[in-house]
Length: 173
Image 1 (cartoon, rainbow, N blue to C red):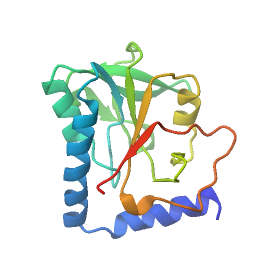
Image 2 (cartoon, one colour):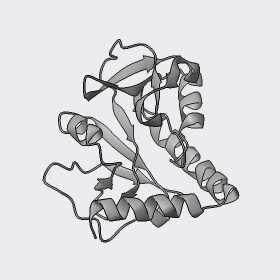
Image 3 (cartoon, helix red, strand yellow):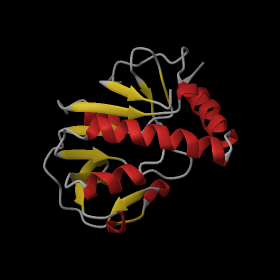
Image 4 (cartoon, rainbow, N blue to C red):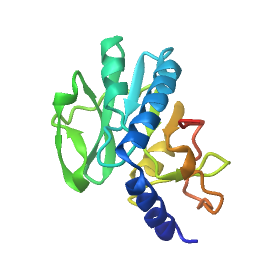
């Protein structure tokens, strides 16, 4: 199955989840993610939108615990991470994403929480098809953590030469 077909499949699976199922999964994933992020002082994390695994509670937790939090912004065709002090530092931007209104790059975070639609057992992720994260992660040497629904493990996902495996993936299971 092509990556485009897998994207369609996994997006439809997410849309089919009830609000209660999503909330239950988010609660477990949030608890696991906060425990996993606790040792780190600086965190790069996506600001979730739509049916993505919700990161808003994780971001609030990190800020409340004195972590330096940076979130992605697409600048001149590539990802740049910008430090925020509250979710309100973000506005709606291209692709329906929430991005910081500032463009001042943060120092490189110790760990990145990466968005994904699906994953395989080798910890490769299926992203949204724009390639921004793979291009960024190719030059990043810190820890990478993916957040995904357990049912989005995809045995048919084959990686391409430019794909970058994650160090760890958390789900609700």
